[in-house]
Image (cartoon, rainbow, N blue to C red; front, side, top):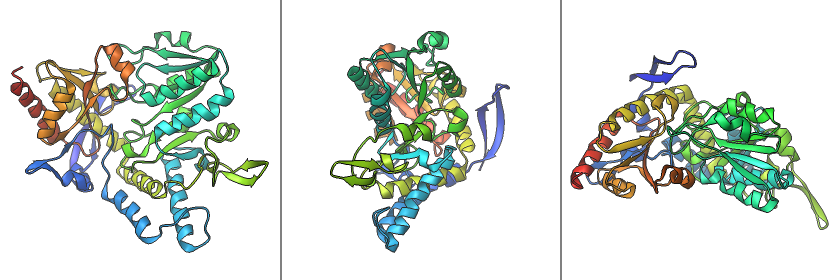
Length: 427
């Protein structure tokens, strides 16, 4: 169907664009969306920020590998191994194009974005961070972009500093020039907050860090699945994201790094495939990207991720982002009609498809349990962002998150269910 979507413009505020985006057809691609949670209760999946559902083409691509050419990669010269290697490395090439990496060797397969942060912390960090050095983060980071750096600075005698956020969930950049100094070695921040949904000014932050000689790592777990990402335009030095949030399988993610940095970094793990030659008195390492991919990799998962990238590419990331902007705007307006409900974060035109909220008189866990009875799946908790919630004075929030298959009818069901929850508790 044709849809009118509300999207932000660089200089012209907000304007309407018309694009072809057949949500009903897209929904038919996802088998789980046809399921009933309980008899007669269809699934309303509003938890894509935690983990996205998988289209049938991704499931079939992985099944095809296991059924038809299951074999290890890089090590065999028989047909099955060669076909598996071609599919595995072909996925890497398509991922590189998807984020506009300069070369496919800059794409390192990891288990998830968390492993990407740990890889950089342990490999680059251990080799480069010294006592008194500073690493800058923000107060809205996911634990995956906090804990590895905490471990590193404890080991190295370095210092962690944080960019605060404003009451509206945007970064407070007024003190950025004071926080970024000649002692700053790395600025690691999220492109999109998994709680507020805030879309941060990545290029501005990268340029500010580079101006003082610091490197930049971007958490793109909530960005790559939802909008066009160009690592060369951003000029970030490292970036991590996860497959399971972008229609791909669990158990695989991507670390992007500039080639010259990755080549200078020592291996993260030792074992097979990351070596060129092993002797009893020492070893030499393989070329990029395999230097960082020890052992038998997640072959089916890489193939599934490559297929997910194809799926998203065919739909068009600009179309996906526009649809999510429309849905988010619709959701925020609808939720504002629920008495006692507070949504955290900036307006729809400054955020991705996330609505974290509280409902006066109800714990987020109770909200989630009650919504589940109506087939509605949301997230409740601290969303792996405890420091953010602590600053807000909250133990938890409820979070509805949207994706390319979310409809206005699903938002309406969410609001109706929230009104029902209030009545049950006589609020």
